[in-house]
Length: 435
Image (cartoon, rainbow, N blue to C red; front, top):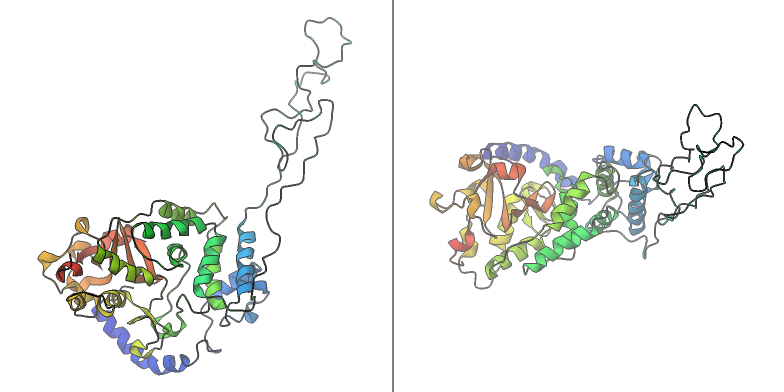
């Protein structure tokens, strides 16, 4: 989320007016009077017959998502996104000579005009061409009777999978946000990709939570949304029960991908996972990134710095961070044995303040970045003034960084917009004399 100093002051003033209403709404985790923020997505999934609903008005978006409803949703998405089966073309006779008076094959050298026996080595006009594909469901190499005048019957189509969603244990228990992401990533056929992200982090010596891979994939797919700052009480942590509204939003995003196995979104995530690798890390880089990676999937909370309940600017939230709050949480609030002065290297709380706390001669250019460096983004990239710096994160190596954005705490690549707007980095570990 990019907010410059002037915009921040304006938003703060607006929030000061909105705080009483927002704080009153926050007294209930899911107030019944809450506007239907996921209305368009709910209408989309209901139109697809998902969630077992026929009317958006009876959807109950603020209710907790149950484990069985989640299983039903994943099954329904797979059914909705399977390409339709195209019936094979019917077998047609080979084209014949339009000048022929019949389809009898005769020996050109023969003078016996009464010969009607077809040549034994040539196919009859009713036999399928050898180059045609075998019928769907039939065995490769199956041929038809040369004397038959009707196409050979095909076998029934092979079983395409279960015809009903699986039954789960404790079906009425609530499903967490991390369980929602894991199930949806699996429904897209990206379980292997999620495993590759986790294995890539572990291969570098990092300890990651069990949800790491699926949370990385879910956020690369854009399955999350950031609620407005005045509604940060809606934001859910990975361990919190998911709401039906959050599930509907994610499902609607997936419906926009197109047929399973044929969407650029899933192919792109799989490609990124296949190549995900981190460089060798020093002990201190490992400590920093262990903490940063442990926060994967936490929500974006404007002004947030906490894993638990807080009320930055008066809006109560369950926990989470904005972009500078995430870096603050990792470097400032985390206790590291033997850290020397690491916690004191970051002094100001905002992105702007942290970006100007070291001399320009100590700023890190893109080509010199190392894991655990703090990185900043500005409107004019390296030519940005300090006032133009509006976003930050932590570099993890090989072109990847971790930050708190509209998708919450997520991994991202330093490509596209991020590469264009990369301003500079700083190295708190060096500033604290730790390497």
